[in-house]
Image (tube, rainbow, N blue to C red; front, side, top):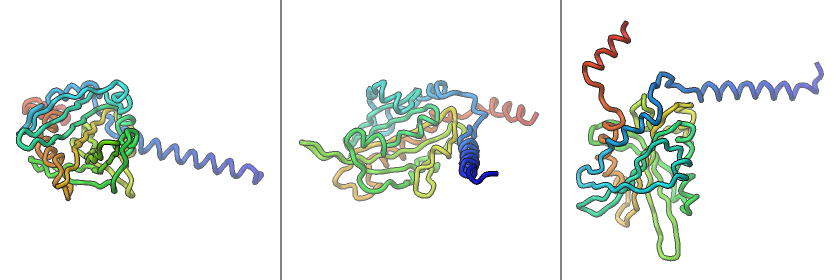
Length: 240
């Protein structure tokens, strides 16, 4: 065989290996998922507009924003603490994983004139029900002629069959694309608040306090418990 064909053979082998790796890691690992994103989005109606001292107001969302985010359904809401006056924005969406994993704040915020301030970190939220939740968080700042704005954003994903808010990372990079594969439905959640002068630590953020209280309520809405009779019947069917 002529050596002239060797580069083409090597290239073909590399393409085959990469195709295999992509196919293996990007397959739908939760193939048993019966409900599609549209059906799961109906659960968003149960996300409370009022919780503790926080009162929510629905925010309008442009069709372009929904399409860019891959949101089949969404909750876009501004919550105000009636005691302190502090505010937190909630952005909860569901859609196909190929769309949901792509648009993170590091992509969306710069397109709106913001720049990231400091490093992205992984942050464990200690919820009211003690359930583990891990979010990415970062600050973004923006200057205009009249003001200097700094916002802190928390974001994470959750698979409907997994019931766990995660910030998947590998070798210092966001790993959501490979972690969730081509799942037919995936949740993504943002908490966003303005950074005040007295916020020296992440724990001082209004979004942190709000997330601790709101996450159990969101979980109850998105992952409703099966009635005992239905759960027992499901187990019997599986055993049979």
